[in-house]
Image (cartoon, rainbow, N blue to C red; front, top):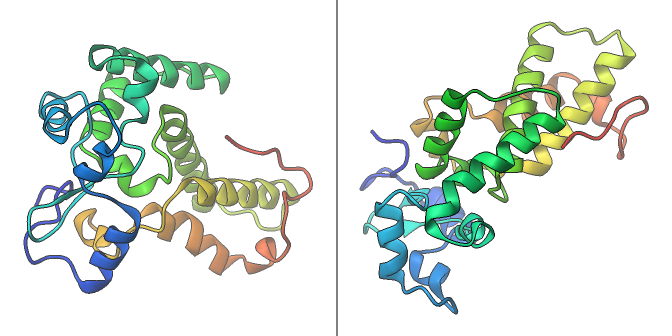
Length: 212
């Protein structure tokens, strides 16, 4: 099954409640905009805007409310891809790394498929970069735990809190369509359960720098 569509009859009532609370149909996205829903659908079909993040059983596509944020920032449909790449590259430079064309293409495909609408509270190139950065750091940290080291504990907590601020809760069905536990389960809920003492106090832990 394509992980960008929910498919008829696959969503539970809990899924539908979550989706309808946090996502909207294209008519709602277009409300108060100069573009009609049909014009937005044409931009989706032509690869300038993301596909729906979820599809209800009646075929209604459901989108993040900020669907048009990148389009508005870019200024025109034909500028969206270049604008997307530019902002990703700027973030990479800020973090002292670089992105290959292959990586840029992969992130763009993920954006157009609506994947990031499922996991990010606000879908921007900056948040896409930060999410991937944090996922990689947390995966590495949890694969080689050093809970006796203050620096490791501080960084783990800071990274978990940063990812928590970026990510949505996910629909229950996301665990099915993405083939298992999602990043929130693996990299936010799991470390909090395993190392509860690290998250007992509010605020940024001593020795940790805010991430993203």
